[in-house]
Length: 255
Image 1 (tube, rainbow, N blue to C red):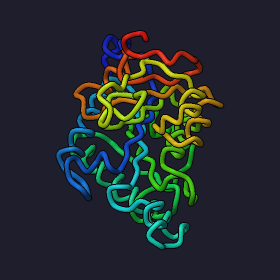
Image 2 (spheres, rainbow, N blue to C red; image 1 turned 90 degrees about the vertical axis):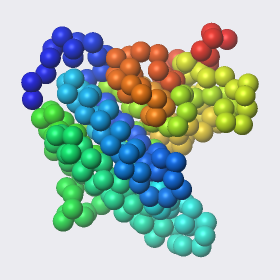
Image 3 (cartoon, rainbow, N blue to C red; image 1 turned 30 degrees about the vertical axis):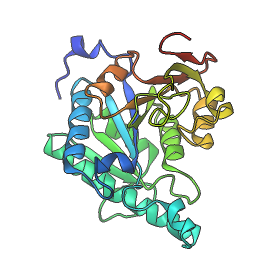
């Protein structure tokens, strides 16, 4: 792949891990995968890749099965979580197909063994894929029950030495309260890891935030449905909310 170095120099981050929830793949539906959403995500990831950015993804499975929800309905929690892990593999394969249709080389690597459809997760091999400009999609969560795919995203970001972890949501950052319910909710521009935990802002589970904090992994929360949001984040622009070792609680208006 030929990379325009002048364009690549515009970007602040060279290796990014993007966390996608399964629900984000549903679009306006209530279940399954919206092909239009998958193509749109693939298009933005492709643009990043062609600008010389090494990009990996972690995808959830909540659009098909959510382990915690199944457990609440009476299924054994470990069994339910394994079902959720399999759902993430289905989503990862859909993303791989969408990326390949855009002309990208993509690899699905699973934390649980499903060798006929994807590779096993091996850290060194994953990094080598990234160095060869392949998009890597991590599936199967951490491979263990009781851990969320948010925790898997933080873990993989640290393991592959990513420069930035992006949590893609349906809102443009972290708010003081639910912006869909409170019209006075204010978006934070910058937050500290401990502030998220102390204020119980709920953007990611505590394990994921602690992993980021203890390994100094910057986290940016943004709206995936906002055109160009990934590109702006990769350039280090003020997109969504940045979470770092800084205790500011600064909102967009500086309050």
